[in-house]
Image (cartoon, rainbow, N blue to C red; front, side, top):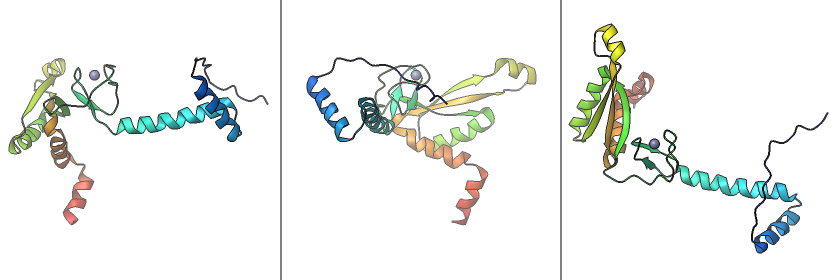
Length: 166
Ligand SMILES: [Zn+2]
């Protein structure tokens, strides 16, 4: 049976002669094909780079969200920078029933916040009540505290019981 064809790309870059010779030497030492050597070196280096990148929070000023990437997954903006203390960051979206609860918690902890109502107008008209949800934003300086508050308020039932036994 024929071996399945590799899904690959040809590359053709004019690279520094010294680096090329080091690569040749490396492949020889490891008894690897140049292609295999290149793939492993790049894979190893990029894995480190990606892990490092994922450790850093970055901020998209268009979407007001924190992401662990240099590019926004929502609007595709590139070269995102680390958040500044005053950047408003999206914390959570809660339906109107629970939004009040979260709002109280933020107030009690003196955390300034902004909200944005995302009322489903058509749906609200049909049901006749204010159905919709509220998006919460806080300055980055308060972001992690707000996330903790959110988790303490909206933890799934199971984990709340565990806490009671501690
Ligand atoms: Zn964005």
